[in-house]
Length: 240
Image (cartoon, rainbow, N blue to C red; front, side, top):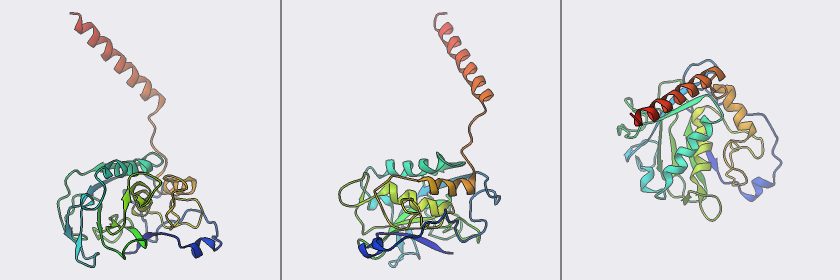
């Protein structure tokens, strides 16, 4: 099962010409959550793993976000999931308590699990994410951050944005590969020149899952009438 990484571009790498291409789908088939039919939506659960046994790490452990992230990291985490559900037919369900099963072992209670371990020290690989499941491994969709990096909850200053990196890795966990399109979130090099998914990224996610489902105008009208009736009833009831 292939995993993908987000790295910091060296100056030499940035000086090389980068060929533009359309969004790139991950190497697995169908490479998406939910129905295997391309363009159909999905509901995906996620959790923050605790300190768990983890063969993906050199020390055999994956660690909780709380152990190496700034205290207010959760705002960035939820924003990253919201960034994708806002542009594609995706519903994310937060599992508040991860059941502590070892990484890639059967019986996990969430599809995407977030954790961290040491990669290669500071300023190398920032994070990696696993593509959606096709082979049954429960590592599918999991995302690990490098615990040796300095993480931050905003742009500017030293460190790396939790939101920007997680939104990129979620792109992989949901089925997108790296793209050569400059200025795209799914480009393999970290950047703060923009925030979140860009046009090429959105096109790729919508190809996999379709566009967000918007209630029919008639449904919205009926809902509005129902709420108005409820409000009137409550007002009248308060005077009885």
